[in-house]
Length: 275
Image (tube, rainbow, N blue to C red):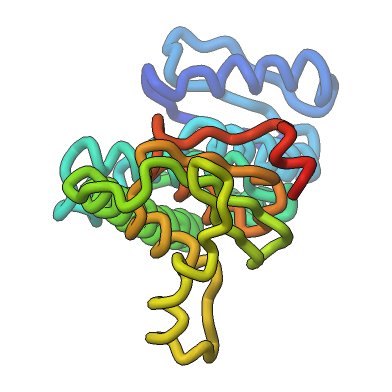
């Protein structure tokens, strides 16, 4: 009967209880755990090679559950030295969220990488130091996590640039006098907007006139035009009617963030029904 010894430490000792659970339940009769005085060592007798394969699969899952977040944190601290501690933590949170949202197939792919390395190692050795194995034998798996961290860094940069952009727009609004105290925007359809003053007079042509002349009415981005017009008008009060018709959700979020307390989203009024 083949024997497998797994060496742990205080952090990874939970593996022992998982193996004991296997011996008492799923793999009862296939593996036997020998009693030993050292809590950080577990000796396992294997009835057949298939039992070793099943233990390898279990260990692969345990490595993902226990080590994955820790490994990403180490990768971030090593590769993101130019970022502050708070920024690194934000990157870590983004990476962790990406992992949580990973499809079952991607998680399975990472588990297969670990399982293949484990199977190859256990074919030539019956002594496994778990932490050492993760550190020195899982280069491909760690590379996958490095790719995940790179994606998280890119997303963090995009989000940071967006926040800086929002702050700049808010600054422009705060420092300039409003051209119109109150503006109503009616969203007729995606990319179709009309502007009205506080007395519900149509001022769309006046608002768009200068922008359209400069753009020569060619390749106009009406989403950008909407934002530019609102920034130029800088109204103290901004009412949006049929706001849900804005198909560009990023645009809708940007408008809310820039105008904050100035903006009111109408949920159905007489003016809405007329327009």
